[in-house]
Image (cartoon, rainbow over all chains, first blue to last red; front, side):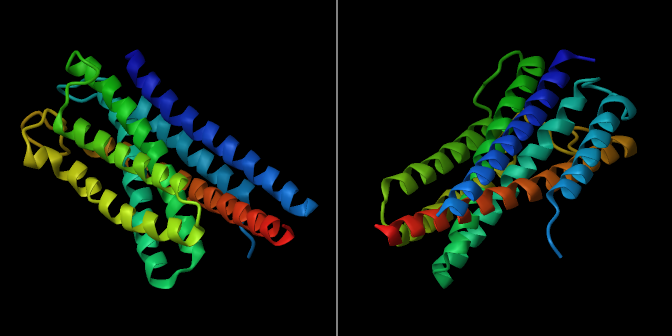
Length: 37
Length: 223
């Protein structure tokens, strides 16, 4: 299997996972901030 | 019924894993492109998510102009964020494929160029949002700009019809991809997985914007 196939799959999956992790954390932080107020 | 993140994300993870496995190991190689056709299964879904995000963004932007309801502006901004993220994945994955088949990462092919213009148009959308402080003016100006920026989406889609292009076309005869039954299944599975991911990230991005608005309005009240 050409390495470029794994590069593209890795780019797609890793970007999605990193984005989901970031947006989940940002949501949790905002919940905490809103709860404090 | 309450939206269960964990269940939705679990189902999405299973669909994405199965479709990736199907694309990598079950679908056959293509006659002319060989194993490299598999790049296509992971390049087309982000491109579709990008177009879908921007469609949601422009439609809700227009709804904002009509109703002045900030929820539509929030959804419009969320769609534009995802359009930028998945547009970038599409551009990078496309250039990886271009380097293997054309010998260069970038050769200003009409599809590459118009997608890059699309990406910069939506980068401009965020620069515009950042430059306006008044929330109502920001939302209205962004919605109008979004309507103009969205013209780059059909332009990017039909670019290879308008101008001579090396970009492969589905079912095309000259340099196109002749996908057979199992290949089409792999493609459809990956698109479905991508749409499930899109649903999740759009909801979470929208939730975040609503929570930020809530926080900012409370801060303003306290001041």
